[in-house]
View 1 (tube, rainbow, N blue to C red):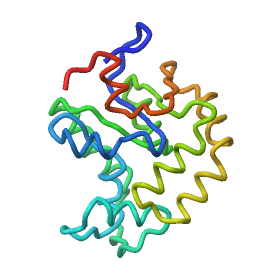
View 2 (view 1 turned 180 degrees about the horizontal axis):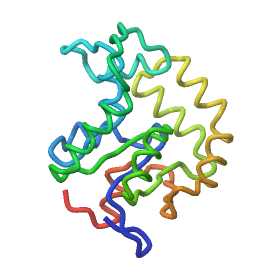
View 3 (view 1 turned 45 degrees about the horizontal axis):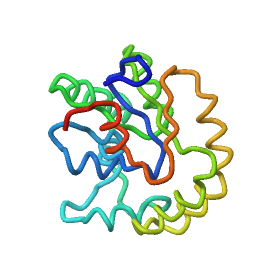
View 4 (view 1 turned 60 degrees about the horizontal axis):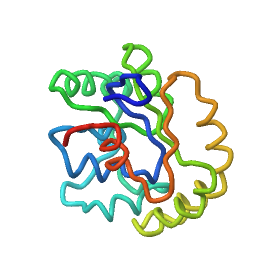
Length: 178
């Protein structure tokens, strides 16, 4: 993939831009890093719907798995396997995600909302039935998170998405072939 003449192989994107939707729609092309991380930390019911899972963001109600070694190292092993299969990793801006891409010299694009998107992002969370705690926390911290996103230095590939844009349309704009 490429943006502004710079190639990248993975994506870190903020909440509300369509990471989960894209990974669910194209499971043979993309990996939702956060979902893999979640499955390592919690016992997730097999029959849970996407809507039910979204409602738990901010307040996970699942039983925690017993720790048998580093969750981060287990996650990295899974991600290494998925990359070997040719899949594109899509992650939220968690420290482990940045560390993974940087430590393996995987160029990534950081995708985050443009200034003035606060209300639209909040409405996206509401429409996908996120937990009130998650909605409130992200809304209150929107400006703080955005400033941090703009100043992120671990990648030189940044994309500020605009109103109405989602990760799928952004990647099409970059020339990605679905």
